[in-house]
Image (cartoon, rainbow, N blue to C red):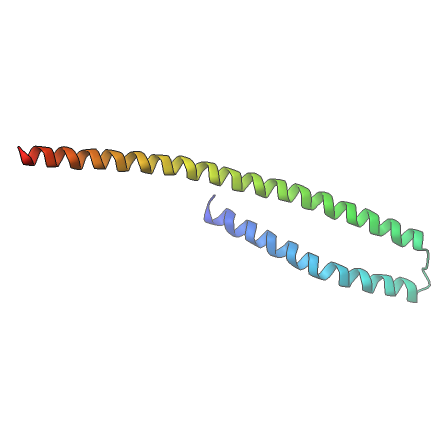
Length: 105
């Protein structure tokens, strides 16, 4: 995962954080406005709330799946890179041991 992708995911996390903080406040204000304007059809309020909840839940779910997939790719690539580093260390160690053996003769 590149630095740009990491920053993008962190930016998305901040957006979800703000959304989680502001949404209850906005919904409370909207309910108060509906009540003040005489729109007291609670079936409508509940229906709009349910549709909003389902939309947010599904959107969040797909975002989580995408983010987890990105992290899984990074972890997989890190494991491959680590194996390459281990192999290079073995090669260097072998070369050093060979060099020592040649100087001791």
